[in-house]
Image (cartoon, rainbow, N blue to C red; front, side, top):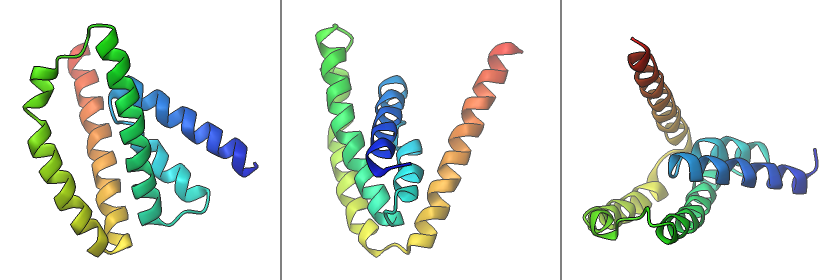
Length: 123
């Protein structure tokens, strides 16, 4: 598979999941970016930037469709900015192997939670 085709598939998958789940595209972007040759940290950083751009686009679309409540979102922005700044400092110092394990644990936890919610709806 050539790099351009892989990038298009990664971009589509990330954008689709981000728009559908709200920033969930990173779950697929990180492994696909690693597969394309980026390091663990480069993959995470690139996925964060992609998620930022795609989230801004999705938020704009939801805003123009009348589904966006800025007053509700504004409550979370200060904490999100502080958390993001702290994470970027921590990111520079974290061992890539530990980062991979943390990411895997979060993906596994998210999958388990989604599965639990799905099963709970059926029961």
